[in-house]
Length: 275
Image (cartoon, rainbow, N blue to C red; front, side, top):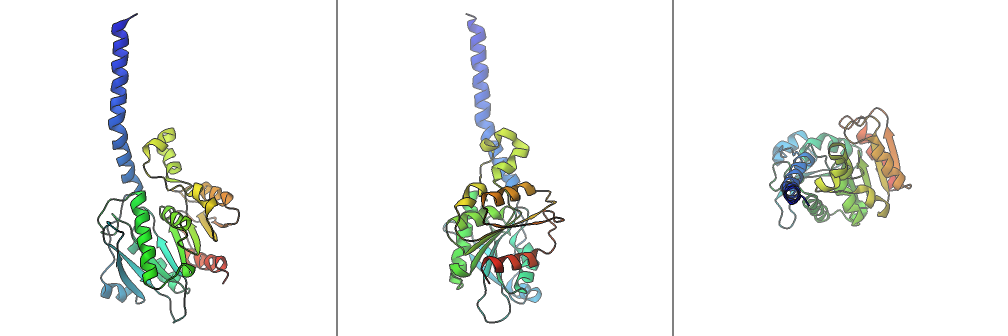
């Protein structure tokens, strides 16, 4: 037996293991910087906000133990009761960036709550799957406090936000779910960079594919045929997992250029709610 050679192999293997034990946590931490690049733009103060969006109001809320978050509710015209679209944004933007979309939806007869995440829009805290879902629960609680019951609450997620909206729908928080440019899971998204190591290196799952078949209530899936960030095949796969879902594919839409989105959401939500 070549004992020195065997010892060298053993030490080499131990070194590989030790390096992996150091590298994996670092790579998982790096993965979170990719998943949550953040966008620091906060909502303007109330007076400034209303100057541009007269029907908008700033709302402040927080998850237990979480940072204070600032969102906004943009209301439609009239005194009648309207559905509230609780909107969870994508990973490279912040809630305030979606004020024009919220105003367009309000003009079509909806109230819209632009919810924010920790680590975004000037809020403190570090984003994680658990933290974002806690922030989503806090937004639902704030919507309830504002007078919107479950029957009037529609959960809307775009890109990253589809994971938050789907988890809240699984918990029975809304009357309907709308997913815009959804992924099957964040791990699946990570396979393009990490290949078979993605389940090990991607710390947050947001497993929409596992959750969607278990949901109650209507589901709408909207995806751009030219999506250059989340492959359209993921939207199609989710629709196949949920045959009752309303699936609409917009041929010329990309991930960040989705023409007619407000009209499409308005029509699909009304049909999903049976209005």
